[in-house]
Image (cartoon, rainbow, N blue to C red; front, side, top):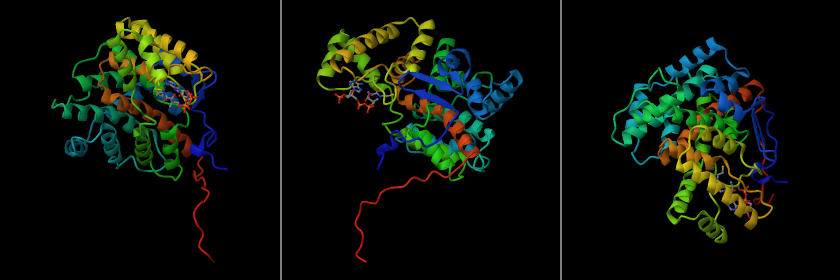
Length: 362
Ligand code: COA
């Protein structure tokens, strides 16, 4: 029997995260991801995913300093970024520069120091390339800023507002890990051959790039814009559903409830954002859920992570072409946790296929 898309096939035991689609729960190593997003920094959660415990003050300082040191591009990497064709998409750019890492990152088994180098560098790759394409000069990383604050600083050239940092930090924490999704599986398959961390992450970025996986929440923004223009959520949503269009930001393969990441992002941001964008997002969500129940009964369609990610990324003025790259910058931490886990108890991942072609006559 063929399990198309490996749906429902258990391919690993993992202690890293629980994704419960029926109950709408997301747990990282025994902790609610939503609580971590509220109470912890990006650096603390990455450390926790990789080490199973939270760092004390001294360990956190050491870990954060290593991440800060890893922000710097080598001169050959800047040259690559300068030379790549201007029309190359950002995900391909990140993939190319990460795959160029190769002195200390390609030994086996993978180490935390290698992981730190990758997580530290991705935001700088994005910011360098983004500013280059906009003919702005590169903003060197600022060691006094946190990982997330420095990302925004390098992109915009100004120290970001605290609210923006908190919102993006919550987004980074809530999207850094999500079970055995396609890109994480790709990373584990590569790691299972005893290949190196750079190769595993390069493969994962390739998987993330596909629109069926890392797809950008830009569709949500288009939907909210259309509603703003027409002035009636009911009319726009009803028309789309009657035309058999999908409402962007709703529905999920696994979650049959409101996506816990959407709930957490909505809660966290409502503590400090009270602007029109968020009010509209909440109103449209309520209306959409009501109409989906009426017109798509029994399908259990609720807001997914992309719905509130769109509102957040827009409120911090992140350009839409950077949505999937920002998701990638966060998800690297989860991929790396999975590579470590695969290394610890490895067996090569090698499924089978059923041959359905011709067989030559004997
Ligand atoms: N709007 C309207 N109807 C939707 C819907 C949406 N967003 N998502 C699913 N449905 C409907 C489908 O039309 C289908 O209806 P049918 O039974 O009449 O054919 C039913 O719900 C099941 O949908 P299906 O596409 O089989 O679900 P899936 O698990 O394969 O797909 C998604 C999940 C996420 C791909 C899908 O919900 C979707 O395309 N959502 C919009 C895009 C989006 O927000 N993506 C980001 C995901 S994080």
